[in-house]
Length: 363
Image (cartoon, one colour):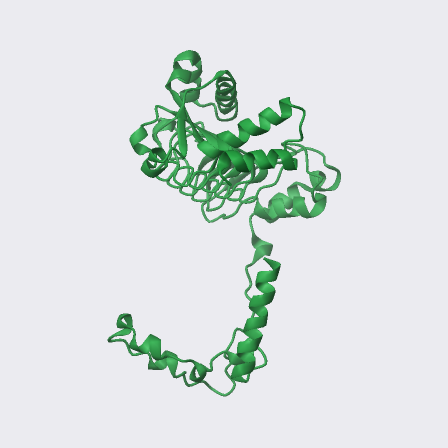
Protein backbone atom coordinates (compact mmCIF):
# COMPACT_ATOMS: atom_id res chain seq x y z
CA UNK A 1 0.00 0.00 0.00
CA UNK A 2 2.85 2.38 0.78
CA UNK A 3 4.45 1.67 -2.59
CA UNK A 4 1.12 2.10 -4.37
CA UNK A 5 0.50 5.55 -2.90
CA UNK A 6 4.08 6.65 -3.47
CA UNK A 7 3.82 5.78 -7.17
CA UNK A 8 0.36 7.35 -7.33
CA UNK A 9 1.70 10.61 -5.86
CA UNK A 10 4.65 10.54 -8.26
CA UNK A 11 2.35 10.15 -11.28
CA UNK A 12 0.09 12.96 -10.07
CA UNK A 13 3.13 15.26 -9.77
CA UNK A 14 4.25 14.33 -13.32
CA UNK A 15 0.82 15.12 -14.76
CA UNK A 16 0.64 18.42 -12.87
CA UNK A 17 4.09 19.37 -14.17
CA UNK A 18 3.05 18.62 -17.75
CA UNK A 19 0.08 20.94 -17.30
CA UNK A 20 2.19 23.69 -15.75
CA UNK A 21 0.88 23.45 -12.19
CA UNK A 22 2.89 23.14 -8.99
CA UNK A 23 0.09 21.64 -6.89
CA UNK A 24 -3.43 20.22 -7.06
CA UNK A 25 -4.67 23.45 -5.46
CA UNK A 26 -3.35 25.45 -8.44
CA UNK A 27 -5.09 23.10 -10.88
CA UNK A 28 -8.55 23.39 -9.31
CA UNK A 29 -10.98 25.23 -11.56
CA UNK A 30 -8.85 25.13 -14.73
CA UNK A 31 -11.28 23.13 -16.84
CA UNK A 32 -9.57 24.39 -20.00
CA UNK A 33 -6.77 21.83 -19.59
CA UNK A 34 -9.17 18.87 -19.71
CA UNK A 35 -9.39 16.70 -22.82
CA UNK A 36 -13.15 16.45 -22.75
CA UNK A 37 -13.86 15.01 -26.19
CA UNK A 38 -14.70 11.51 -24.97
CA UNK A 39 -17.01 12.89 -22.32
CA UNK A 40 -18.80 15.20 -24.76
CA UNK A 41 -19.18 12.59 -27.49
CA UNK A 42 -20.23 9.75 -25.18
CA UNK A 43 -23.76 8.51 -25.83
CA UNK A 44 -24.68 8.97 -22.17
CA UNK A 45 -23.99 12.70 -22.50
CA UNK A 46 -26.27 13.12 -25.50
CA UNK A 47 -28.64 16.02 -24.85
CA UNK A 48 -26.67 17.38 -21.91
CA UNK A 49 -25.13 20.84 -21.91
CA UNK A 50 -21.71 20.28 -20.32
CA UNK A 51 -20.32 23.73 -21.14
CA UNK A 52 -20.74 25.15 -17.62
CA UNK A 53 -18.65 22.27 -16.25
CA UNK A 54 -16.06 21.75 -18.98
CA UNK A 55 -15.46 25.38 -19.92
CA UNK A 56 -15.31 26.72 -16.41
CA UNK A 57 -17.49 29.18 -14.53
CA UNK A 58 -17.27 32.89 -13.94
CA UNK A 59 -15.96 33.67 -10.47
CA UNK A 60 -15.35 36.89 -8.64
CA UNK A 61 -11.66 37.72 -8.46
CA UNK A 62 -11.68 37.34 -4.70
CA UNK A 63 -13.73 34.11 -4.62
CA UNK A 64 -11.64 31.03 -3.77
CA UNK A 65 -11.78 28.04 -6.13
CA UNK A 66 -11.17 25.52 -3.35
CA UNK A 67 -12.36 24.97 0.20
CA UNK A 68 -10.71 27.51 2.47
CA UNK A 69 -12.81 27.13 5.61
CA UNK A 70 -13.00 24.29 8.13
CA UNK A 71 -16.20 22.65 9.35
CA UNK A 72 -17.35 22.92 12.92
CA UNK A 73 -18.79 19.53 13.89
CA UNK A 74 -19.70 20.88 17.36
CA UNK A 75 -17.99 17.95 19.05
CA UNK A 76 -17.99 19.96 22.26
CA UNK A 77 -21.77 19.45 22.34
CA UNK A 78 -21.69 15.72 21.52
CA UNK A 79 -23.59 13.30 23.75
CA UNK A 80 -20.35 11.56 24.71
CA UNK A 81 -18.92 14.62 26.43
CA UNK A 82 -21.21 13.83 29.36
CA UNK A 83 -20.14 10.20 29.35
CA UNK A 84 -16.46 11.15 29.33
CA UNK A 85 -16.99 13.42 32.33
CA UNK A 86 -19.00 10.79 34.21
CA UNK A 87 -16.34 8.14 33.50
CA UNK A 88 -13.47 10.20 34.96
CA UNK A 89 -12.60 7.65 37.67
CA UNK A 90 -12.30 4.86 35.12
CA UNK A 91 -10.16 7.03 32.85
CA UNK A 92 -7.80 8.06 35.65
CA UNK A 93 -7.35 4.93 37.80
CA UNK A 94 -9.39 2.18 36.07
CA UNK A 95 -12.05 2.23 38.80
CA UNK A 96 -15.35 0.67 37.65
CA UNK A 97 -18.13 3.19 37.05
CA UNK A 98 -21.84 2.78 36.33
CA UNK A 99 -23.67 5.44 34.36
CA UNK A 100 -27.40 5.80 33.58
CA UNK A 101 -28.67 8.40 31.09
CA UNK A 102 -31.52 8.90 28.64
CA UNK A 103 -30.89 8.91 24.88
CA UNK A 104 -32.88 10.16 21.85
CA UNK A 105 -32.59 9.40 18.14
CA UNK A 106 -30.57 12.54 17.36
CA UNK A 107 -27.83 11.25 19.65
CA UNK A 108 -25.60 9.58 17.06
CA UNK A 109 -22.45 7.51 17.55
CA UNK A 110 -23.07 7.22 21.26
CA UNK A 111 -19.97 5.76 22.91
CA UNK A 112 -17.59 6.44 20.02
CA UNK A 113 -15.88 9.53 21.44
CA UNK A 114 -15.75 7.85 24.84
CA UNK A 115 -14.14 4.85 23.18
CA UNK A 116 -11.60 7.11 21.50
CA UNK A 117 -10.75 8.62 24.89
CA UNK A 118 -10.29 5.15 26.41
CA UNK A 119 -8.02 4.03 23.57
CA UNK A 120 -6.05 7.28 23.63
CA UNK A 121 -5.59 6.96 27.41
CA UNK A 122 -4.70 3.27 27.70
CA UNK A 123 -3.58 2.33 24.17
CA UNK A 124 -3.35 -1.46 23.86
CA UNK A 125 -3.40 -1.95 27.66
CA UNK A 126 -7.16 -2.46 27.57
CA UNK A 127 -9.61 -1.94 30.40
CA UNK A 128 -11.22 -4.92 32.14
CA UNK A 129 -14.68 -5.88 30.83
CA UNK A 130 -17.55 -3.69 32.07
CA UNK A 131 -15.20 -1.12 33.66
CA UNK A 132 -17.41 1.60 32.17
CA UNK A 133 -20.96 0.23 32.36
CA UNK A 134 -23.51 2.53 30.73
CA UNK A 135 -27.29 2.05 30.80
CA UNK A 136 -29.20 4.05 28.19
CA UNK A 137 -32.95 4.49 28.04
CA UNK A 138 -34.78 5.60 24.91
CA UNK A 139 -34.11 5.48 21.18
CA UNK A 140 -30.48 5.72 20.09
CA UNK A 141 -29.49 7.36 16.81
CA UNK A 142 -27.28 5.81 14.16
CA UNK A 143 -23.99 4.08 14.95
CA UNK A 144 -24.61 3.23 18.59
CA UNK A 145 -21.33 1.89 19.98
CA UNK A 146 -19.38 2.31 16.75
CA UNK A 147 -15.74 1.20 17.18
CA UNK A 148 -16.40 0.58 20.89
CA UNK A 149 -13.21 -0.76 22.55
CA UNK A 150 -12.83 -3.29 25.36
CA UNK A 151 -13.83 -2.11 28.82
CA UNK A 152 -17.01 -0.29 27.77
CA UNK A 153 -20.48 -1.82 27.94
CA UNK A 154 -23.54 -0.10 26.48
CA UNK A 155 -26.92 -1.38 27.68
CA UNK A 156 -29.83 0.16 25.81
CA UNK A 157 -33.41 -0.19 27.08
CA UNK A 158 -35.41 0.86 24.04
CA UNK A 159 -34.40 0.57 20.39
CA UNK A 160 -31.80 1.85 17.96
CA UNK A 161 -31.24 2.90 14.37
CA UNK A 162 -28.73 1.59 11.80
CA UNK A 163 -25.07 0.62 12.29
CA UNK A 164 -25.18 -0.59 15.90
CA UNK A 165 -21.71 -1.92 16.75
CA UNK A 166 -20.13 -0.78 13.49
CA UNK A 167 -16.43 -1.61 13.77
CA UNK A 168 -16.97 -3.02 17.28
CA UNK A 169 -13.47 -3.44 18.75
CA UNK A 170 -13.81 -5.34 21.99
CA UNK A 171 -16.69 -3.57 23.71
CA UNK A 172 -20.07 -5.00 24.64
CA UNK A 173 -23.49 -3.84 23.41
CA UNK A 174 -26.84 -5.05 24.75
CA UNK A 175 -30.06 -3.80 23.15
CA UNK A 176 -33.41 -4.85 24.55
CA UNK A 177 -36.94 -3.40 24.84
CA UNK A 178 -37.86 -1.34 27.84
CA UNK A 179 -39.37 -3.46 30.61
CA UNK A 180 -42.68 -1.58 30.19
CA UNK A 181 -42.91 -2.66 26.55
CA UNK A 182 -45.79 -5.10 26.00
CA UNK A 183 -44.85 -6.21 22.48
CA UNK A 184 -43.47 -9.68 21.74
CA UNK A 185 -39.76 -8.87 21.44
CA UNK A 186 -38.77 -11.69 19.07
CA UNK A 187 -41.47 -10.61 16.59
CA UNK A 188 -40.48 -6.94 16.50
CA UNK A 189 -37.51 -4.93 15.25
CA UNK A 190 -35.10 -3.69 17.91
CA UNK A 191 -32.40 -2.16 15.68
CA UNK A 192 -31.91 -1.12 12.06
CA UNK A 193 -29.73 -2.22 9.16
CA UNK A 194 -26.02 -3.06 8.90
CA UNK A 195 -25.56 -4.13 12.51
CA UNK A 196 -21.99 -5.08 13.43
CA UNK A 197 -20.49 -4.00 10.12
CA UNK A 198 -16.73 -4.66 10.11
CA UNK A 199 -16.68 -5.67 13.78
CA UNK A 200 -13.37 -7.16 14.89
CA UNK A 201 -14.06 -8.28 18.48
CA UNK A 202 -16.50 -7.85 21.33
CA UNK A 203 -20.08 -8.97 21.99
CA UNK A 204 -23.61 -7.95 21.02
CA UNK A 205 -26.86 -9.27 22.46
CA UNK A 206 -29.97 -8.03 20.67
CA UNK A 207 -33.38 -9.00 22.01
CA UNK A 208 -35.50 -8.67 18.91
CA UNK A 209 -35.08 -8.59 15.16
CA UNK A 210 -32.76 -6.38 13.14
CA UNK A 211 -32.70 -5.26 9.51
CA UNK A 212 -30.63 -6.18 6.49
CA UNK A 213 -26.88 -6.88 6.15
CA UNK A 214 -26.33 -8.15 9.68
CA UNK A 215 -22.64 -8.75 10.54
CA UNK A 216 -21.35 -7.84 7.08
CA UNK A 217 -17.53 -8.18 7.12
CA UNK A 218 -17.51 -9.27 10.76
CA UNK A 219 -14.07 -10.68 11.51
CA UNK A 220 -14.15 -11.53 15.20
CA UNK A 221 -17.17 -10.36 17.19
CA UNK A 222 -19.84 -12.58 18.75
CA UNK A 223 -23.51 -11.66 18.35
CA UNK A 224 -26.86 -13.11 19.36
CA UNK A 225 -30.03 -11.84 17.66
CA UNK A 226 -33.66 -12.97 17.38
CA UNK A 227 -34.08 -12.52 13.62
CA UNK A 228 -32.45 -10.69 10.70
CA UNK A 229 -33.31 -9.37 7.25
CA UNK A 230 -31.67 -10.11 3.90
CA UNK A 231 -27.96 -10.63 3.20
CA UNK A 232 -26.96 -11.74 6.71
CA UNK A 233 -23.29 -12.58 7.36
CA UNK A 234 -22.30 -11.23 3.95
CA UNK A 235 -18.50 -11.31 3.45
CA UNK A 236 -18.06 -12.44 7.05
CA UNK A 237 -14.48 -13.62 7.72
CA UNK A 238 -14.49 -14.54 11.41
CA UNK A 239 -16.35 -14.46 14.70
CA UNK A 240 -19.62 -16.23 15.44
CA UNK A 241 -23.32 -15.55 15.66
CA UNK A 242 -26.42 -17.25 17.01
CA UNK A 243 -29.60 -16.33 15.15
CA UNK A 244 -32.74 -17.58 16.90
CA UNK A 245 -35.21 -16.29 14.32
CA UNK A 246 -35.74 -15.70 10.61
CA UNK A 247 -32.73 -15.01 8.36
CA UNK A 248 -34.10 -13.38 5.22
CA UNK A 249 -32.82 -14.22 1.73
CA UNK A 250 -29.26 -14.45 0.39
CA UNK A 251 -27.77 -15.55 3.69
CA UNK A 252 -24.00 -16.11 3.76
CA UNK A 253 -23.11 -14.53 0.41
CA UNK A 254 -19.34 -14.23 0.18
CA UNK A 255 -18.97 -15.64 3.70
CA UNK A 256 -15.40 -16.96 3.91
CA UNK A 257 -14.94 -17.33 7.68
CA UNK A 258 -16.63 -17.43 11.03
CA UNK A 259 -19.52 -19.58 12.20
CA UNK A 260 -23.26 -18.98 12.15
CA UNK A 261 -25.71 -21.02 14.24
CA UNK A 262 -29.23 -20.58 12.86
CA UNK A 263 -32.52 -21.77 14.31
CA UNK A 264 -34.88 -23.44 11.81
CA UNK A 265 -32.74 -22.46 8.85
CA UNK A 266 -34.46 -22.58 5.45
CA UNK A 267 -31.86 -23.66 2.91
CA UNK A 268 -33.69 -21.70 0.21
CA UNK A 269 -32.70 -18.53 2.05
CA UNK A 270 -28.97 -19.34 1.88
CA UNK A 271 -26.95 -17.90 -1.02
CA UNK A 272 -27.53 -20.37 -3.86
CA UNK A 273 -24.08 -20.05 -5.46
CA UNK A 274 -22.31 -20.66 -2.15
CA UNK A 275 -24.36 -23.80 -1.53
CA UNK A 276 -24.04 -25.22 -5.04
CA UNK A 277 -20.29 -24.65 -5.12
CA UNK A 278 -19.85 -26.21 -1.70
CA UNK A 279 -18.28 -23.04 -0.33
CA UNK A 280 -20.75 -23.12 2.56
CA UNK A 281 -21.37 -26.24 4.64
CA UNK A 282 -24.62 -26.82 6.52
CA UNK A 283 -23.98 -29.28 9.35
CA UNK A 284 -25.55 -30.54 12.56
CA UNK A 285 -24.16 -29.48 15.92
CA UNK A 286 -21.49 -31.58 17.55
CA UNK A 287 -20.81 -31.65 21.30
CA UNK A 288 -18.59 -28.56 21.18
CA UNK A 289 -21.18 -26.64 19.14
CA UNK A 290 -23.91 -27.57 21.61
CA UNK A 291 -21.83 -26.14 24.47
CA UNK A 292 -21.24 -22.91 22.51
CA UNK A 293 -24.90 -22.47 21.61
CA UNK A 294 -26.07 -23.30 25.14
CA UNK A 295 -23.63 -20.80 26.60
CA UNK A 296 -24.76 -18.07 24.19
CA UNK A 297 -28.42 -18.69 25.01
CA UNK A 298 -27.75 -18.55 28.74
CA UNK A 299 -25.80 -15.32 28.38
CA UNK A 300 -28.50 -13.84 26.13
CA UNK A 301 -31.10 -14.50 28.82
CA UNK A 302 -28.85 -13.02 31.51
CA UNK A 303 -28.16 -9.86 29.50
CA UNK A 304 -31.57 -9.24 27.89
CA UNK A 305 -34.11 -11.25 29.91
CA UNK A 306 -35.19 -12.80 26.60
CA UNK A 307 -38.30 -14.93 27.02
CA UNK A 308 -37.69 -16.50 23.61
CA UNK A 309 -34.19 -17.67 24.55
CA UNK A 310 -35.46 -18.88 27.92
CA UNK A 311 -38.07 -21.06 26.18
CA UNK A 312 -35.40 -22.52 23.90
CA UNK A 313 -33.36 -23.48 26.97
CA UNK A 314 -36.27 -25.32 28.59
CA UNK A 315 -35.75 -28.27 26.25
CA UNK A 316 -32.30 -27.70 24.89
CA UNK A 317 -32.04 -31.10 23.19
CA UNK A 318 -34.96 -30.22 20.93
CA UNK A 319 -33.54 -26.75 20.36
CA UNK A 320 -30.12 -28.08 19.40
CA UNK A 321 -31.74 -30.41 16.85
CA UNK A 322 -33.39 -27.37 15.21
CA UNK A 323 -30.16 -25.41 14.86
CA UNK A 324 -27.94 -25.61 11.77
CA UNK A 325 -24.28 -24.70 11.78
CA UNK A 326 -23.26 -22.65 8.74
CA UNK A 327 -19.52 -22.93 8.16
CA UNK A 328 -17.41 -21.91 5.14
CA UNK A 329 -15.63 -24.94 3.66
CA UNK A 330 -12.12 -23.45 3.52
CA UNK A 331 -12.51 -21.92 6.98
CA UNK A 332 -13.39 -25.35 8.36
CA UNK A 333 -10.31 -26.79 6.66
CA UNK A 334 -8.09 -24.12 8.17
CA UNK A 335 -9.48 -24.69 11.67
CA UNK A 336 -8.96 -28.44 11.39
CA UNK A 337 -5.42 -28.01 10.08
CA UNK A 338 -4.53 -25.74 12.98
CA UNK A 339 -6.07 -28.15 15.51
CA UNK A 340 -4.11 -31.06 14.02
CA UNK A 341 -0.92 -29.00 14.23
CA UNK A 342 -1.50 -28.19 17.90
CA UNK A 343 -2.01 -31.89 18.66
CA UNK A 344 1.30 -32.59 16.91
CA UNK A 345 3.03 -29.95 19.02
CA UNK A 346 3.57 -27.58 16.09
CA UNK A 347 3.22 -23.80 16.07
CA UNK A 348 -0.23 -23.20 14.48
CA UNK A 349 1.12 -19.96 13.00
CA UNK A 350 4.40 -21.46 11.82
CA UNK A 351 5.56 -21.79 8.22
CA UNK A 352 4.96 -25.54 8.06
CA UNK A 353 1.34 -25.16 9.15
CA UNK A 354 0.73 -22.30 6.74
CA UNK A 355 2.08 -24.49 3.94
CA UNK A 356 -0.50 -27.13 4.90
CA UNK A 357 -3.25 -24.52 4.96
CA UNK A 358 -2.36 -23.31 1.48
CA UNK A 359 -2.43 -26.91 0.28
CA UNK A 360 -5.84 -27.77 1.71
CA UNK A 361 -7.43 -24.51 0.56
CA UNK A 362 -5.80 -24.43 -2.83
CA UNK A 363 -3.87 -21.26 -2.03
